[in-house]
Amino acid sequence: MAGQKTFYLETFGCQMNVHDSEKVIGTLEQQGYARVETEEAADLILYNTCSIRDKAEQKVFHRLNDTKALYKQGKRFGVLGCVAQQEGERIFERAPFVSLVSGSASYRRLPEMLVQIEQGATRVTGLDDRQTEETFETEFTARSNPHRGYITIIEGCDKFCAYCVVPYTRGKERSRRSESVLAEARRMADSGFTEIQLLGQNVNSYRDPEGKRSFAELLAAVGEVPGIRRVRFTTSHPRDFTRDIVEAIDAVPSLCDHVHLPVQSGSSKVLRMMAREYTREQYLERIGWIKGARRAISMTTDVIAGFPGETAEDFEETLALLDEVQYDGVFAFKYSPRPNTPALSMPDSIPDEEKSKRLQILLDRQREIQRANYEKHVGQVLEAMVEGMNPARGQVVGRTSQNKTLNFTAAQPIAPAPGVYVPVLVTKAFPNSLVGEAVQ
Image (tube, rainbow, N blue to C red):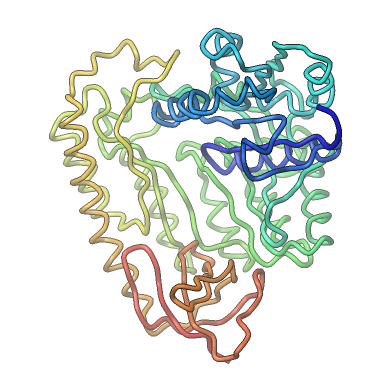
């Protein structure tokens, strides 16, 4: 690696992986590496991986297979993230040209691992036990958006849902000190950030190690940091979703009026088989708290179609739940077996064709719900944070506090810059977006 060292990084998966990549990029740049846009231009090729679903995991290995010819040109490869933690040194056997395998808890050790690679090491691993607060932030984080930024407040998961690999790839739940979170939020505000998103596999399971603040109190405190206009949080677990979270959203205007609360199934029987630790009735109780708020809070969720043992009647209960809750968005997926999970021992007797059929029925039902929900915004003036431009349509791309995409036209000849907040009159609605005109 003579002269300028370069790297290419591709990220798969959730917002936590995106934020992890920001940490990796910042650390690499501090070590003298320059980021490039293609694998061909890079000395070091990194894939930050996700293993939540089988397709996401397979996609990484397909990418490795597609680019392995570059190894003969002297390129070095690294696999980071959840697949790295899950598969460990088996990755070297499956892809012998890979030089680095590192889980997210080891990114603080990247400098020393990079030195080993530069000195010719062919198998370098970072697979820590993930039990330290040092896993939350690296010394250098290259935030990709100068206006909206992430803060990880809790890592890992203790829930052990029957289908989920997270406890095995991210380790046990461990929370960051609230004072550390607030210090990070203040630094971000001082740097010009106006929106912060608090992250965690189960973000509302947060427990301040020093006992100073509950999750709801931390939310409110971040929302009161001068300069911060919007605070979001994801992903919540229904078992630990408490009424004071809704009360905080009502009390602090900067807390966004959006809650993502994964349900996974509308059947209590299936929820029990999934080891989700709540019933349909308990979930709906929490939905009742949200609907009872003084503010109109948008709700989104996750659903798994075709979990082992899900009957047609169970699936109908899920459809009925969509009708009752009226979500503004649903992330739905077919069940796929994951390594190490309890569901692997359950007979997966639902044919893939039936899983696909149920998934499509669910998506079609939800699309109609969203169509009606989004139509309700026509005629309203909503505040949109500018994210960019859609030149093909001549529209500014924005996002509302409810996390809805709002594309709009602006009267002035120069479009508002990213990060600016603009009042917009909604003139048209689609199932996944709104259209409007900026108002004075």
